[in-house]
Structures are given as C-alpha cells and as structure tokens.
Image 1 (cartoon, one colour):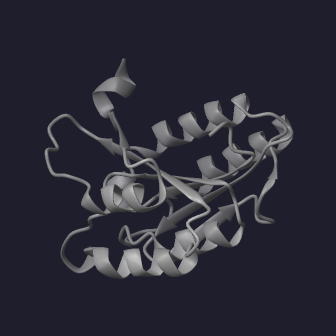
Image 2 (image 1 turned 90 degrees about the horizontal axis):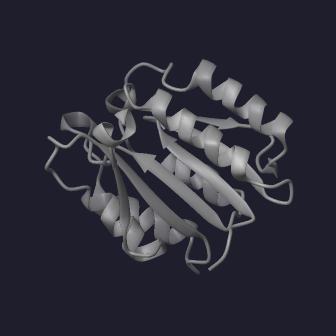
Image 3 (image 1 turned 90 degrees about the vertical axis):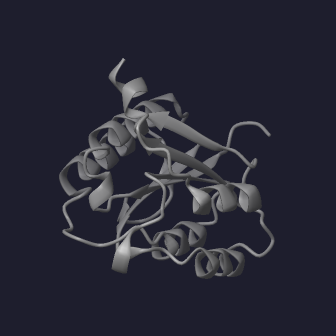
Length: 177
C-alpha cells in the first residue's frame, strides 16, 4: 500500500482517555517527526459533540514548524473539554471532509457507558455515508490496559469495513517500557 501522503489523526479525548492523552500526543509527535514535507496531516480531537481541529485550516504540509505548532496546540487543548462521550461520528465527519488517504483513529474502545454508550449500527451507517466508495482507509489503534478484557467491537467493525481488518492494540504496560 505504501506510505500515505495525507493523514488525519482522530483522537478520542473523552474522559476515559484523559490518562492516555500525554502518551497519544507523544506518539503523534514521533509520527509527525518521521513524516516528510511532501506529506500532509491534520489532527482532530473529540469529546462528545466537541470537535477540535489542528491546524485549523485542515491538512498542511508536515514541516517541522507545522508539526511543532500542532503538538503545542494538542498539549494545551486536548482533553480540556469536560464530559462528553466517545461518539466518533462528528470527528470522523470532519476527518473525511479533508479527503485524506488515511485516518488513524485512536481510542480506548469507542464503547462508552450508560448515557454515553455509542450506537454501533448508527455509527457504521454514518461512516458508510461519509465514505461510500471506501476510498479512505481507516486504521484503528486501541489503547488499553492488560486488565481490560472487553473487546472493542466498534473499532473492529470500522477496521473490517475501512481498514485492513485488524485493530492495533497498545497497552499502558507497553508504553511504560
């Protein structure tokens, strides 16, 4: 498949991800540092209905200056919106509107609980409407602890429909090494 020239990082910044955000931002920073100036990127963070895009103008060249500015913005804004669930649809709508080759979706699982539970069927219908030709790949990256045994069914569904069928799982224990 090769290296994607246009990448949008979609980061779940809801309450369950608060502890993960410093690690996620560090990983985004490392990824941006490895990108070349002929690649473009944007970062979309979401918590409930709140969606933040950096850089605000959408996809930009992955220059050191643009990357540094995006990381600085993430470090000051990600996770600052109280409450909210893990419904990815508003953020994915923003990401698909940029017409990237690849969306990297990072979350603890996108399940939500109680009033924040995410409707899997409605989410998949919305993604089908946003990407009917399935020409934008979506790679799902799940952040979890070794003690969390529940599955990430929605992330698995998204990966099967739009990605390579696999959800990459990264544990807190792996990050601590």
